Amino acid sequence: MLLVKIAKGILSAAVAFFVVGIVFPYGIGYYRPQISSYVQLPPQNSMWAALIVIGAMFAVTSFFQNAYSKGDFPWLFGKLGNGLADVVFFTYMFSLLPSSIGSAAGIQTSNLLYLIYLAVALSYGYLILDFWVARRKKRGAQPSN
Image (tube, rainbow, N blue to C red):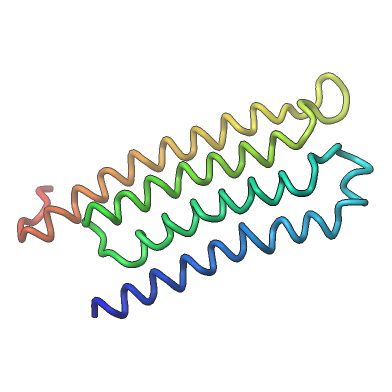
């Protein structure tokens, strides 16, 4: 059972890194001429470097989420780290966009980031409760109603 969970963790880490660290920057590079007509992109090598680092963050957190059982502290680290990786990823992606779209009363990208930050923060509240219940179940105690 332990080897299966470790294999699942390694596979999920490889997929997370491949998608975020390789496919995503390659896709942006492929469509760079079309995207650059709307938004000024940073140099290609700096975008690759940033997305490879973010992909590595996703890979590490994905491994911890899938290689350990719910209620283990490495699993909790993976879940918390995944939220932070999401925040870093969306902050980087939204930093590529202009601060507003359309007229002065258009969509403000900073407000969209605040919604993402709020969603991650609220999910952490649920995550802590879920972790607490899983720890209690592992010890054999049933949660009180």
